[in-house]
Image (cartoon, rainbow, N blue to C red; front, side, top):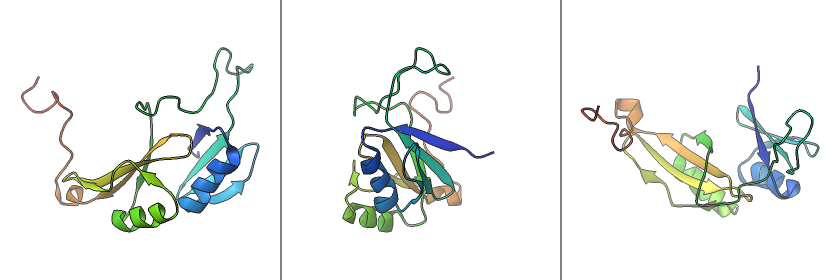
Length: 142
């Protein structure tokens, strides 16, 4: 079994360039559908479109509201500062610089269509320090 992630994109060549040239993925197939191997995963990119016989009533489109997200890619790296500097120099636009969150250092960036991508480096997790529970979900909150 191979798990891949499908992205509905507005401009396939632009997205292919981002995932291969900025993030360092390997182009497996340029179009129909564009497939990029990124580390141990594959990203499949194609333009949006209307319903098809196998997905009736479902329309695909890139993100429309940059202030919301229902999913995101999560990339783990050994040296987040080096990745942040390298990808920034190649044109990646990060939401913030890397922030130390005790369990990990992390930051987010967006791809050309607005998909959110988390970049993280385990730090405290390696020594038993884990992420704080979500608000209202900690010990004693029932």
